[in-house]
Amino acid sequence: MPKVEIFPSILACDMAHLADECRRSVTAGSDGLHLDIMDGIFVPNISMGFDIIRVVDQIVKIPLSVHLMIIKPGPYVEKCVELGADTVLIHIESEGDIKGALRKIHAKGARAGITINPETPASSIDGVLDEIDEILIMSVHPGFGGQSFIADVLDKVKTLRRKLPEMDISIDGGIDTQTAGRSAACGANIFLAGSSLYRAKDMAAEISAMRANAQKMYNTGLNS
Ligand code: DX5
Ligand code: ZN
Image (cartoon, rainbow, N blue to C red):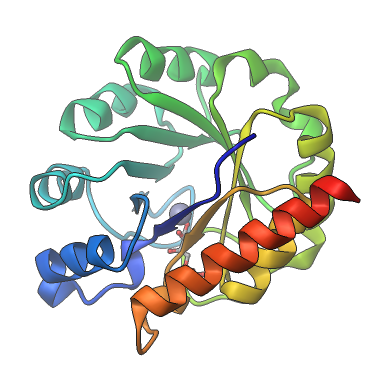
């Protein structure tokens, strides 16, 4: 059974104290950290560049999931792994040889993931299912933290979980304890959360509440 995991998204952390924020996330019980890289073309924003992977990898030793919101990920995926990414997530809506990019990630020894925007159907990834370890369902339009959860994407989570019982299915955007539970009931098992965790008064309490609710709801979903 896929394991329930919580990855704080450092887009929402206090960048003036990046090292402390990364260490605080580990102490609070994170399973890994999520890093958002944007190009200002695939999404209307630019967040961090590739060097953030190396920097965070030097600070903490937990798995790093790198989310590439860039128009042509192919030429950059190997670099991400070399810099310290454990999982590289590219978008099905991006350009170039998607399957080839996923193969390159695997060839470098990292986990490969495909990401689906809110309006993109689950069937869009049929052709790459044998190349991936993780499916990331976007529950906001990518580009910015702090947006509201789009519940319509839960149907896709359900469809994909029914079809792929062993696949890691992650969800990103507007995730808090409540929306993590709703997503888990539909079959999501990895929760990427920025604002709700970094702005919480007590990050450790927030992570354990999110984990407990997600695990409970995931089990409920299995039995329904
Ligand atoms: C959005 C990013 C998310 C973002 C989530 O494009 O992919 O990882 O950090 O932020 P919250 O949890 O605040 O919605
Ligand atoms: Zn992300």
